[in-house]
Image (cartoon, rainbow, N blue to C red; front, side):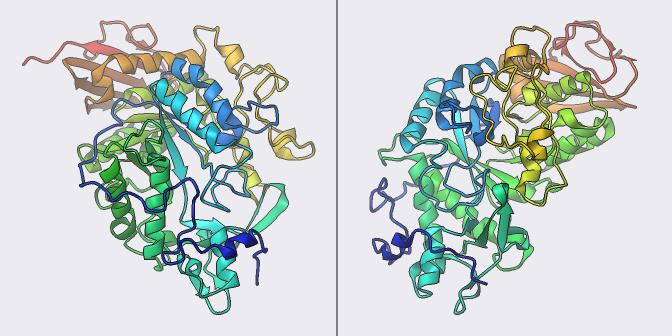
Length: 530
């Protein structure tokens, strides 16, 4: 079946980079400067608090209902108040899907998000505020309408055809995309094809070396204040989709790519999303040499509020994480239901989830709206990516939908994702409603961020599971001459903690050693004797 429409026919006439098969980019010099001598990567995540923004849903700056780059720029004061030191943006490149994970062109910016000038302004303002910027990337696949695919179908001998995997090149049948998909039916009932990029083709490696460098050092002047600080690599695998078609990618594609970019800027951060969420991810940190991975087993145990499982996950995570590498601690993201919609969830559980993400060893990453208790769970009644819209609803800046900056791009009467949406007017889950309340979840997150920022032991110190007594978990953090006991009551009954520090105030909640059901406390301990 030929599922490619004749889009972007002009791409067929491109000849500027035929020798390498590299599409031209007017913003990039014809020849990149040779890489500098390799330098060791520089640890940059110990002190970070990352904020994960689903672009289309975060903040609308111009009233069209779409979250955009200028909306993120306008939100910098809010991000600073939350203690955020880095933002992670979901993909920005043009795409026909609302989440932008399958590109119709790798170059440029989705026009609904703004322009490249808007992006450069955002980078400058974030850096001025002391906030880093990481971009989400998924370039293992591309979608119908992408110039490479269009050119390859027009001429199977085109250098662009070498960029793709083929089921039958002579017949024009490209290989499947992810999850054995040949086409995607998505939001708006639009359907288009998807295929896989040949990551082992030398021309593809050369292209992505240059492409990512465009984001890191746009004008090739060796200064990085106008570029991004790192990347998240979505759906990263050593054997892509476990098909045996693209194998040993950690060593043959990803690590050489990281090495090339680090030779230019050794401070770059590369965050891998394990495709298998049960994987602790050791090989990502060693063979692929990524800077960080996501602590999926910790997230699962944390959301289960299971003391034994959490202690086991923390011990195993620590065991496989080499020095200088990092685990991102999280409670939710764009691919899973919001924790505030979990069964038997309670306000105290939400407060404990926040405390554990900030106080345990690792780098906290917050999904936008988590700090408000935004709700949302996948809708299994949809067969398209519409099923995930409930986990990606508009950030609640205002108490009502009519308030300014609400990115209600999915407003469509008659669809469950709108008619049965989770966010409602005056539901208490908004910045407007929570900002002035000292005991709100939002201000709990702010307090935790400030606490972590103030104590080296809570940022990069050591961690030791001291005890698991039934549902009571006790963890010691130490470093910089400080020691703390994190005490989590992961049960529905009150518990009295009688261990070290129990005679001091709880630094998180202000109470003492009598812990409420599901409460987490933090106690200062005497410094260890030299």
